[in-house]
Image (cartoon, rainbow, N blue to C red):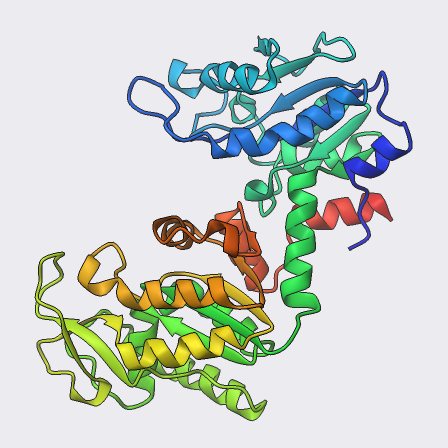
Length: 396
């Protein structure tokens, strides 16, 4: 994708003395007292900020935090804890600036944090007047928040339209590169894992991937709907009978290309949805009317693991069972370790997927872990994200 990158501007010496506006994703979890409980996103933003500072720029950084009402500030909406943590990581002061849209005072080599951008009226609707005022604050706009790349808002899209220069920061550029490697020019075979509770929430993803991947592994409630499509019983398991025909179309689309959707041959069932429910492994054809399918069985897991170990590229979105319950976690664990062992280029995204990666300690063995939930899903759907579109247009 032909976009301008922050590294390009630094290499050309175009940041020295310039006002640089960085849109980061600093939307971190906090406890009831406002203390940050997990700071991965702040730590991930540091390289971009340091690059701009080291290049002699006057740096402004902003983000959204939580779900504030535009124009109605509440203390819990403030980026103050984020600014404090960023200052610790950078080893320098990071003053917090409120009411910043009409002007910001920051010297070259210094950084300030601009208060929660979603407090500005017109932010979410990408108000042109607001976007132009933001753009007037800077010489260079840097988008480094993949988690917001699927939203056309004033601080993510409008400012990129009107800023003198607009570019991608290192986090966003890395996402673009990883997604392109996984989907645009994949090493074959390309295997995708798409799991979740409902086909309806990921039907467009399944349909889009059915035309691209060599094998489409489905899990969770989605797999139950595909079991129905294959004529197999699912008892009282979560499924969407009204989407069985859609599942059949995905299977047929794959088969027509010589690709396939592996249907589980065995499953792990329980009579109730509970962590301490007795787990029973049985053939997929033997599921009883009062059974809940809560995981794939060991034979299925071994077969799928073999497919993953021989893959060229792996795209992973979703655990294949109720991995939070130990008795029903083994399918996801087996596939996670197969991905870790594989020589494939692997890209993973989505909150539950990241939780599974952390649980099984394979972070360093997954080639790329995406930082954006909704944005990652929209990419899998085949959509062009607004952030990608505007940066590509500005970089042309």
